[in-house]
Length: 145
Image 1 (cartoon, helix red, strand yellow):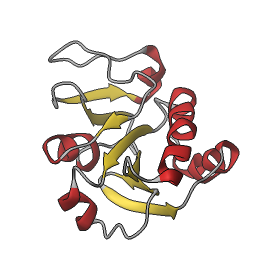
Image 2 (image 1 turned 180 degrees about the vertical axis):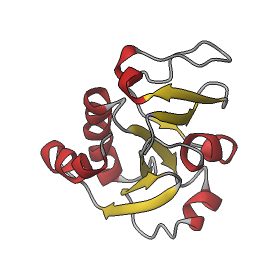
Image 3 (image 1 turned 135 degrees about the vertical axis):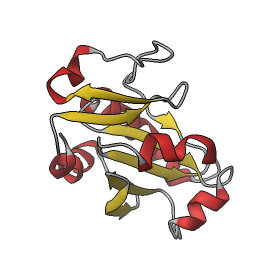
Image 4 (image 1 turned 120 degrees about the vertical axis):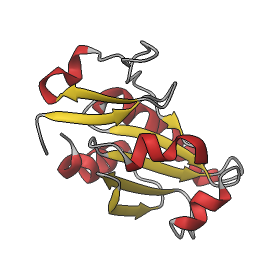
């Protein structure tokens, strides 16, 4: 990876460039001026998936979930806590498989929750099932910038 990372803004979708050493300085979108990170998972849709995942140089971990899924409900707070601790070293995002069936299908999601780590828009790791906080952090460790 270079010293400058491209990443999309969750608010407006604009592509931003941030120097790696300035990630922890609270970078803001050059277009809408909103923070690029807020310590919470971003909701993914067809409309923002390309900007936030496929065009991002920063690794993105996506939680594929559904509201009716008990294990997904267990995983939600664990995922949110990890986001508050690990962003901006990796971006956290959630994709509702019921609302975004085409995207879920595109990645062959067969069971939920499923976590996928994307690096430069490509899948590099996948894990199905609930992970506890320490397990999640250990699984993500090799992908942090």
